[in-house]
Length: 90
Image 1 (tube, rainbow, N blue to C red):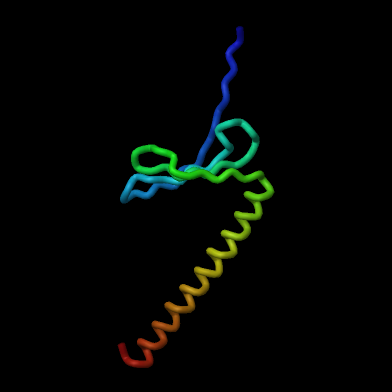
Image 2: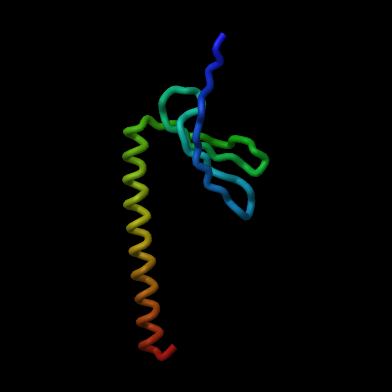
């Protein structure tokens, strides 16, 4: 009998202070969908989200837009703060 193997690749986003993480990759059941799991510091899966690839693409677009908008808002606030400091003379 010939052995069959599967290779799975998951991205992990670690919280360096607490040891919990997000895991993102193909689902572990082989359904052909994307799985996002929150794993605590004890390696226990706390929550998971399953998305088909179109949902994942749309979520990525939404997140990209939200991060861009947030970065713009933060940058504008920092600029305004610097302008105010310059106006008031520190």
